[in-house]
Structure formats: C-alpha cells, structure tokens
Length: 334
Ligand SMILES: NC(=O)c1ccc[n+]([C@@H]2O[C@H](COP(=O)([O-])OP(=O)(O)OC[C@H]3O[C@@H](n4cnc5c(N)ncnc54)[C@H](O)[C@@H]3O)[C@@H](O)[C@H]2O)c1
Image 1: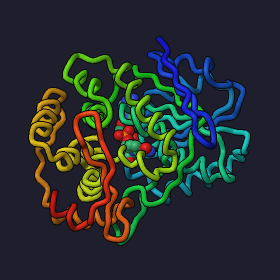
Image 2 (image 1 turned 60 degrees about the vertical axis):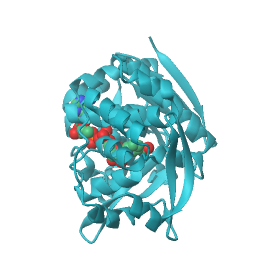
Image 3 (image 1 turned 180 degrees about the horizontal axis):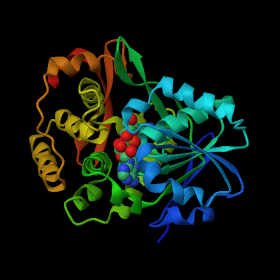
C-alpha cells in the first residue's frame, strides 16, 4: 500500500511516496511529457533505466561510474557541461536515479545549474531511501593534496519529489544493504526506541523506511539549515567520515556510521546491545583502526570550529542531544 509524506521546508514542500512496484507506475507521479535529464550510475542503468525510459517521452541520460569516486566537483562540472551541450533548460527536470552518490551529486548539480532547476530523487539503495534522498544536503568530495575529503563543497537544495520503490532493494549487494541498515540503526538508536527494538525482530523493510523518513522529515523541517537539532542526525558521523577517508571509501558510508556509533556511545550496556543487533543484522563492526590515523581526518570535519566540536551525544536509546566539546577532549575520548 502506498505511503505518503509531505515535508514542509522554508523554500518548498517536498512530496515523498513509498510503494512496492512504484518504478513501473511512474506516470502516476510525474508528467511523462516533460523533458528529463536522468543521472544514474552504470549498475543502476543496467538494472532499471529501461523501466524509466519506456514511460517517459523525452529523456536524456548521463551515466557515472558507480560509487564514491564519482561524487566530486570535477564530475559535477562534466555533468553541467553535458547539460549545457544538450540545452537543458530551467523548465526541464533532473531525475537522480541511484544511491546516495547519485542523489548527492544530482542535487548539487541541480542547485547550481542556471541558479537551480527542479529535480526528483528516485533512490535505489537502502541508504538513499532512508536518508540521503531527503533533507536537501547535496555535498561533493574535494581533492586536497591527492586525497579526497568528504562533502567539502555543497548546498542545501531540496528535490520536489522523492519516489521510493522498496522492491529495487532486492538487487542490492549485501554490503550495500548492510550499509543502509547502519543508518537505519542510527534512526532507532538516536530517535525512536520502538524502531530500535523492532530491528531485533523480523521487520518489514518498507515500514522501516517510512519510519526513518518520518524522523528525518521532522528533524530537518524544524532545522532546515543545520543550526542545531539537525546536527544530531550526524551521530556517529565524525568517526565515520574519518573512517571513509582513511580507508579511501573501502568501507561504505552506513557501515562506517555503524562503527562510528560504537566509538561515540559511552554506556557499556548500550554498546553491548548495539553489538548484539549488529551480529543479528550481519553488520561487521570489529575492525581495528589506529586512532591517531583517524585524527587528521577528524580535524577536517565541517562540524569542527575554533578547536571546538558540535557533537551529538546519546542520552538514552531513542534520545540524543547536542553538546559543544573541546576537540582535544573529544579526540582523547575515542
Ligand atoms: N545527503 C545526505 O543527507 C546523505 C546522507 C547519508 C549519506 N549520504 C551519502 O550517500 C553516499 C552513499 O550512498 P550509497 O550507500 O547509496 O552508495 P552508492 O550510491 O555508491 O551505491 C552503492 C552501490 O549500489 C549500487 N546500486 C544502487 N542501487 C542499486 C540497486 N537497486 N541494485 C543493485 N545495485 C545498486 C550502486 O551502483 C553502487 O555500486 C555517500 O556519499 C554519503 O556521503 C548523503
């Protein structure tokens, strides 16, 4: 059965629809006569592009190499060059069809192309369905001294529409599915105890996706530009971004978040409970990192200001708050 959310931001209302099989029913949601610039990656193109194209009268496709290596400023400029050469106008619309890499770079390009054109997110990974497709954060990685640093350039710019078809998750690789579950655990652990407990049972993924999106919708609509409570969504991310950069993105984002949360929870009982949940879900967490190696990446984190860090901390399962802490105290604690 279709689930729907309307998320009210200052700049626009964003409509979200979740339905099994939605991908074959696109014209229920979008105007097939419009011209679309579809941004996708090689894997998703093979699996799903045909299904979109046969329902749309006029679409142009741009295909990126899969994964994080494509989410950077250089690729964004190539996409823009292609859009200009195809005369994509303000009346046309981008469709970002793919995982978080595609929804992030698609949103970023949409936000700067001709000072902003419309875009629709069709997220195809669990991580993108529960998290990256909503909230308008569109960051790309930036190369400094031969090393890419995460999301150093970006905008907050919302899609008009988010179309979620949970059935596409069936083709995901296990590692990518587990990465999405890392973010799902974050939503339960930090904001919704019932959801956290549900993850120990045989849950229905479409219900879990809806619950995560409702939490994100509530938080991001109350603090669209990340001045306070939105930062609590970054729980586990300070360590996670450092792990991603340090391992050159070998460990996927959501899995890095799952590991980061273990570093950032201080209560032993909750750490044990989290580990039990990771074991049940199949999330691998017992990787040992040299802390001093992570520190140089943590220092590049956007949340660090003047030797202080805005850090979400867990009060209890289902409740998180934001504190300011001296960077050195934080680094000593990990
Ligand atoms: N903007 C935000 O608020 C936000 C939030 C969380 C994460 N992110 C970003 O999201 C990115 C990670 O996203 P991701 O985990 O979706 O990675 P991804 O986009 O790289 O996708 C992972 C892999 O899955 C493949 N894939 C996608 N859909 C598939 C399907 N249905 N079947 C089979 N294969 C499929 C892709 O080709 C890719 O190889 C990171 O860059 C992270 O920083 C952004």
